Image 1 (cartoon, rainbow, N blue to C red):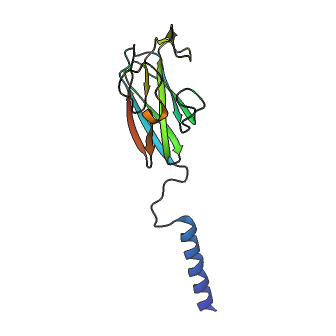
Image 2: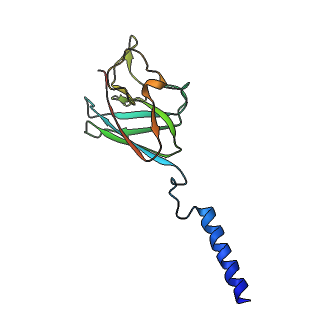
Image 3: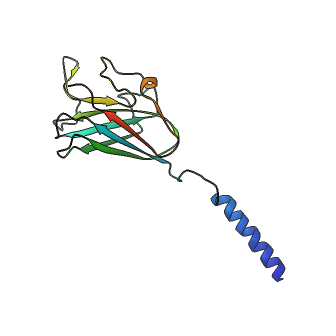
Length: 150
């Protein structure tokens, strides 16, 4: 009887280890985090607004998977964090909403507010393609995006 109990307990322990992945390196159940350092704000007021995309057809101003908004509070840089991301390919578009009106300011189609895109480090005359701004998330990841434009 004792022999059967120990065998049953051992089997139960092995089953629990197999279903919980004990001893195996796995990502957190909810995914990875992406930390984005946004640098180079010319003004220290307003809010940096960012959108994270995993759909190439939606980038850079369509339906995004997550968004974030962080006030500058007297600083020239901010840190944004996107959480619970599955591994995959992403791109970010963002802008410095200096007047905090929740709109990207333009005059005659030209930006009035600073903007940025993941991977793109130079000012652009048109919106970049997803392939130009994409990066991989396979673990907790950190990137830096400089603000461009006016």
